[in-house]
Length: 351
Length: 235
Image (spheres, rainbow over the protein chains, first blue to last red):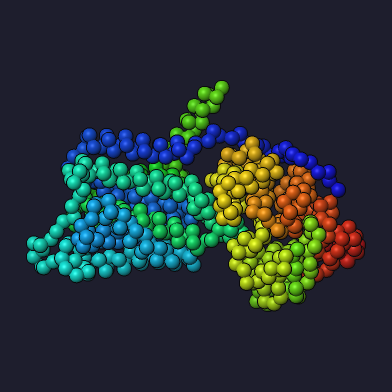
């Protein structure tokens, strides 16, 4: 029989890699706030009109991407209905706004909660299927949404549940922005503020109990269950959070334009969001942020420079090839670089 | 104590377990047999991933058959898998915290249990190291550390020594023998390392083609000519 020992020092012939100085959660949260603050500040000071509108849309896109990245990065689930969920959030917030005229922030929350509920229902197939099948089912849901919204359109303050007005459209009521953010610049900063909160919310989930549960599920569902994780519950949670963020993005978009058009919610946009998610990177918040800017702002830039659409396609094709070659995406590469520099700095400081 | 009664598992025309009976009473029990004998299938039945066609399994007189895998964890059953499944993106501590999140009654209790498990498996200095930076031994220790959370009653270890060198296996042995006394849990150990089984397990069950070949004190079982012929390949 082996003698009992009180302490068991590490014994391994295998090489033990030295620990990299830890980036604390607080530091990660601070990085989100500072990065968005600085970038948004520069945009607000230098852009106006068309560009500011594009950046505001890019931020909404980035929010949709963060939900998509959450599902793919944390659980390996491909959701191709993210932009449709943005549309659902926009519809609910517009409908709520025209009924109740609540403060703008409440409208955003209602849009988020509504889309979250729909996202959970749309996520039901994910409990049984994965990969290509799930991607196809969610893409069909995006198509179904477009069909429905083309017929019903978005509420514009009319009577009834659909909130439509007469054929002339003269009675349309636009959704008002918050009083203190009525100008384009102020509204852009407002969107930046809400985006920061949403990114912090997702990051807080990643670093806490749900994030750990999702990590186990992604590694192995059986192992997750053997660790006491209720797999169905946590998958539904991920879909709910992803839907909430998409709904918030929809409400912010509705606030940007005051009204929305069914043509803005094509299923192909959900595919673009997924591509943007891969380009930006799924494991870090910066991936969603950069992916959103890339997929919304760069096309606007190409149009402004009169670049042929085919050149744009080549640009995105090349970027996608790059993302497939290095799955951490642009955000992942930049974050790894920042972490390496931080580790170097901390090591030097320690010495 | 784990009790198995006339347990039969049927996959189409194949019977990985055939009317198996047995009762693991000793603090550390071994489960051995050639490849395809049904060892992992038995662990899968115990942990709720495979439904038996017939028979029953119980843990400390709690019938497990109608409990979901998660409920079995709450009932005190823990397990590891043949393939090590440490999450690369989580730190050593977070890998263990991931189970404490769901079964420890309070946050403070969870922290205390994690500290105790980390110290027991010798990973306290490596607590903040990411899973992908840990070597195989450390990863195996994480998996054992996870099973020690939440007052386990029985721990099923599926080849915990796979891939470890001699020194590491020696450390593993020293660790395993302490678990029943320090954590109050019964161990059921599957391994192909007969030396590990012989030195750690008090009683051992031998399976062959889903049937019980032998069950009793480990030394006597390993010396049994029938077992040696079927499993160890010598008469």
